Length: 223
Image (cartoon, rainbow, N blue to C red; front, side, top):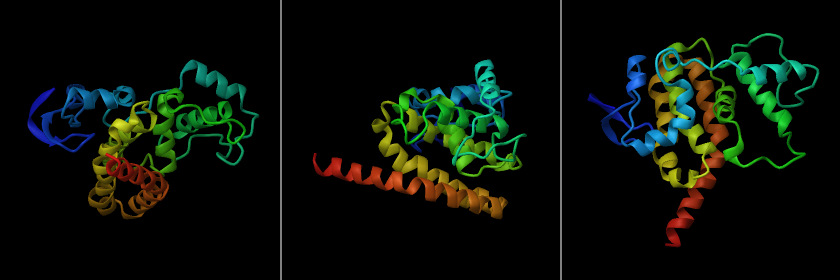
């Protein structure tokens, strides 16, 4: 996965010539400084890797089981988390994203049962949940695809059973890189939508990352 051009690793920000060869064929450069970092993102990235999926970012269709369960549960209220819908909305992944989140909430309805371990949460839940929560819009192809690929690294950390290994990368590169991309690319290109996405992203991740920073500082001081 080596090229003549260089870019920053999606996970840690290290300058590298290594990039995903399948995504190059789709016309988008995704750089990884090492096989380990590419492997870390792969559980999420594999759904959106290569021509026909990577650029523009295309969400996979519902599986037959998901579609069947969705039809069986049409009369069940989503409660406070999602409003009933009758057709796809402008939200990023449309009906498929909402149905995946809805089905997850039906299986693990808070606060009646404790949430399952992150490793057991369906792989697309974190990413589709992020896309919906951060107010991404299907009408923004110019910046939407690169932003979603950046979010895939965050989603990999969210669901990984070894996520603490990547705490430093998340704090020092992944989250700041998303904010930088919003500030330098998205907001100048699409001010109204960009500010909404940035506000939602910062607001909804601040508490988690403040706790993460405290954990890192505590771990450093005890060594």
